[in-house]
Image 1 (tube, rainbow, N blue to C red):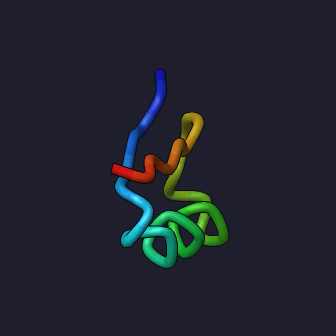
Image 2: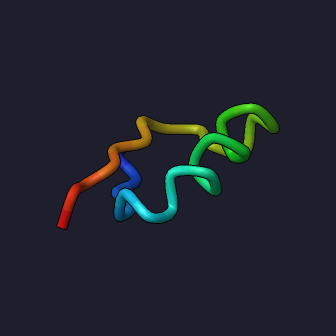
Length: 31
C-alpha cells in the first residue's frame, strides 16, 4: 500500500516515518 502526500506536507511525512506511523511507502507528489 502507498500513502501519497503533496510535497508541501513533506515535513508531516518525515515525522510519520520517524515515528514509525508510516506502515507503507510514503510518496511525495509535486502537484
